[in-house]
Image (cartoon, rainbow, N blue to C red; front, side, top):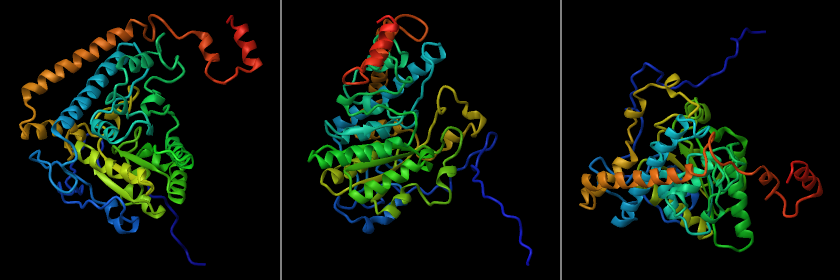
Length: 410
């Protein structure tokens, strides 16, 4: 019997650790406008190659170029810029509120604002998102009240969810925002199931599922792709690849696969990669996939390539596992600055207007915060009523819950 070497496992490691000087020069970034735009009825087999390059519209001069450009008017883009600025201002105030002890928990989407804000503009009323906890832009780019979002974060007397959800886990059926689940990856199978239900009932509404790079390692991710592919569900499946899960880099979930988008190829799904820090590119790719789903042409998998500039949450310290300069070295830039510079290049914006808009948005957020805090915060003021825990669970409250409510004094 011949001798063999002991077996060993390969454990992926990030290229850079605290103290290193990050260098992303080997990251393949296609030139803006370089990637083709196929018709929405293109066969998945004919566009397999689009699972690898990154679709971009804005070049380094701030110009919109290529076949994916020209989707939005100047006014639309100004609104999009304000939406992203609003999300960033909201995040900053709520992050500060958590540090002040006014809430127990918060999660920013710093550097990722373009993804949810642009995607939301491509949807129609009645479409349903199944989001994770970094898609607050799906609500903040609509008319959903900022005060209600803050009330939910504070779990106060005016919390629309009555204190039943962890802070930042919003829910609004009217605004196409399905209740966030902290058990990630459930969003994908729920989105596919909802989309199948919409098709079975002969409706026209489509669904969108959201997942992070780390959660693609969950079995729910693969189950969703099986059903989406088999039944051609009218759904858009979004992977937000922000390079880091809680504290593990994206290579742990990706392994040796070329891209996250390429995982859709084995299921026969059209799979695209887009520059997640390019508002115009995200909108164009999202609209392409949404139009495809609504036309009955089936699902699309989109990998949004971006970078989590902040901590995973207020419970996290990223300096313990990644290089301090990594965010600044990331080659795709800042989504707010990139759209601002594009509008300035069109003479549709200016530094002065930007400063004024920022002041107006921050004032709006501060006023909303004052109103929300008048209803209470984590340790001060009004709280949801205890009796509320017995309500809104069953259509008809069963006898044992009636008894428990009575025993609790309600």
